[in-house]
Image (cartoon, rainbow, N blue to C red; front, side, top):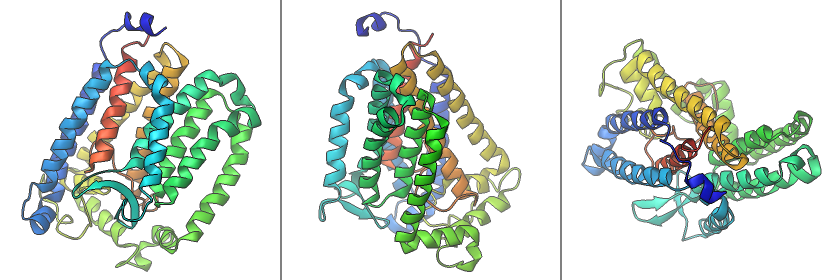
Length: 369
């Protein structure tokens, strides 16, 4: 199978490739625009964040082009090994003195300014492993005990380890992605109904177990109840989006990036984009993500085998969920979570992982019917 596939390569999906590069370029411009003031104040270098983002973008593009050349079946062969390595990294990051604490979460491994976030790589590892499992056990997926529970058990173990950091946002993206993959594989809706009830109870318990999560929910419902505390970010985000209007205030002319909106180059970069480029700029970005989703679905439908199809579904679902959550948070439609906007937000691990994932998707496109 592997050898026969290697003889049937065609050109990759250039629409997907161009769309990815376009979003990446917009992201580089906006990272500089959003971070220049903060970088100048903190590091005396307005290009500090932009230079690091360009470095990881270059690294990510090289990785994407490499993965575009590597047969996606390689992920099937090495999925167990990759998953085990990621589990080991999730254990290591929890060791005090080894894992780095940022934003209240022990989620990072590294030295100084250069670090990786193991939970980000766990998302792709879980997608590859689950794609392999589902392609080999699709007939069992209609059974609650023999199909659905085994496929979700490992996902929930990984989710539990990520929550020990804690990192609810990344864990939610991983679980949501895996649930979509299992649903596409043929799981019954009635089984998901029971899981939805259990998930809702667990979600409420997670919120109740941490006071800061309760504050996020209350600030989501009424941010003005604590405008200088838990509601501060969403209020400042809406203050950025509102004045943007149709055409925006102009590139580089944001006011909220001047120490009003915390870390505007990361989770809330879309708010700065909407302020500077207006409704039109925001629409263009969402339109490009729509193209990305369309091409990903097309590739999944045209994949030559079940593994390739499930792998493509997982990758494009991960992108779609992250975009939905990030935009929802920025516009006040969802409670605040630490989820980056794919290809646009500042962040080495998230950007590199996203480009690697899209490289795998591009490789699958070379074999689509």
